[in-house]
Length: 307
Length: 257
Ligand SMILES: Nc1ncnc2c1ncn2[C@@H]1O[C@H](COP(=O)(O)OP(=O)(O)OP(=O)(O)O)[C@@H](O)[C@H]1O
Ligand SMILES: [Mg+2]
Image (cartoon, rainbow over all chains, first blue to last red; front, side, top):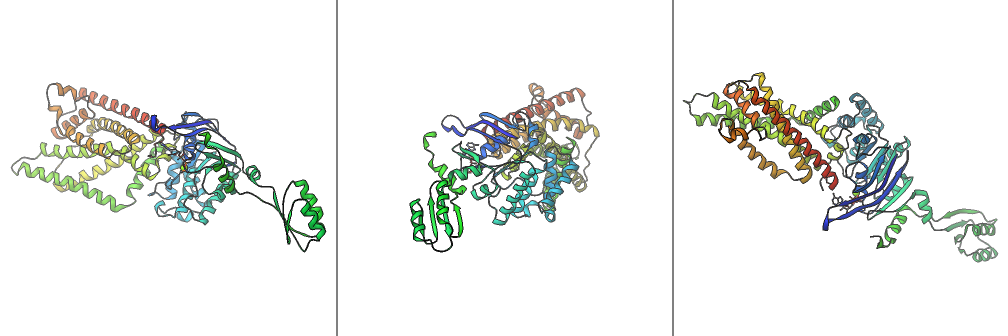
């Protein structure tokens, strides 16, 4: 669906020369959500704009459904984008008018654009507001309209640059639910965000960029697993016998009342479980890293030699 | 392409009409300026002066000047506004490609401006009792004038894309235009008689003055040159605009950085 190879961007010349993006290669498949994460100024927006044909790469190639948006403007039919900042819409126009206008701008026949616009509005729960100028809508509604506009031409790839920025909890939840639906329809979604819980919930894969370079790219699940420690927390119901406590401690676990903490191999975990038998278990849980911990670790730990 | 043109007309019209007080006050201001100009011209000429040619050409000159200024600034100002409000990049995401979109926009805004101008001129004629000759043949030099005008508009649009802040440049430009358009260079002799064909729009404005104020017929040879002038400036404008688009994408400065 989307394929970027070796994308690099150098801004400015001479003393001002600045390499914002270095050799970024990403692939994205149908129905997949890729969270593109990185600290401020890492090069996320630059990369997204290179994919959308708005910033010309210094090196590298972008292919969207087999077409290069920098060579063939036709390729833009496959791309929908909600860019950073809060204004992707004409504020004097109503949602309905915005949808029709942008539909035609994206080469959808006018009648079709109008009909699809109404469908999207009802799907996004904006029917009542369809005649209200965008200016008078709440921030969350504006964002929903912007996403609807990005979908009006039925693109295969949706680019979302910080879609939940400045939204309250409820509005963020709505946007998250929409993104999920959109991916389920078989579109590929590339989104950037600084809200790592959002990324963790939505993404199938994560790419982390730092100072223009991708420092990690893999499935969200695998990444979390990799960074999860192998510490287990067990809880039992009732007292353990002194004999049991002895065996368990021998295996390397610590016992505090009904709580047992164990950091060892998973084979030994079964030995430990056997030793506990027949005391009823209340919980067995493995420590699980969240994306925030992973992110901070990755972004901080990397040596600066890469500069 | 027809759909795009229609969509641009609709968008332009809705944005214009959504706040009617703005529309009315806008028209009142233009009208007041016109009327002021008209009556002071009358005053200076004195009551004994037979109005007619001179006065009409003052009014027409002014009407043309405002039309041309608004046409010239059209693309640059809208680019700047949309870069500030954040819709510009969405426009550049169109598979039509930016030049075609901005061409459609130029047509749409031209339609609106002509409409406003006609309304203002009609009101003015009602107020002053003056009658302007408006033979249909006028449309020919008007077309060549607008072609060159939009050529310049694309040029200024290119400046806006690359340099962002265009307010000063537009101001200076208006001043130059006032000089150029107000001076009846078609009456000059010598070298200027030839040079005026190289300057943007001048051959067309000369012809318009002939038709509207002097009551002279259309000189087809001159019109040919005027048309050529219009086309050449239009093509230059589009060309430079495409270059500016590429440059802005290179610098990553489409949305203003
Ligand atoms: N047009 C430009 N000209 C020069 N430098 C630029 C330009 N656009 C971006 N940069 C620089 O490139 C770097 C990457 O910027 P970019 O906007 O891609 O970061 P980002 O990852 O989106 O950051 P944020 O999380 O703050 O949105 C920054 O250091 C920025 O200053
Ligand atoms: Mg950004």
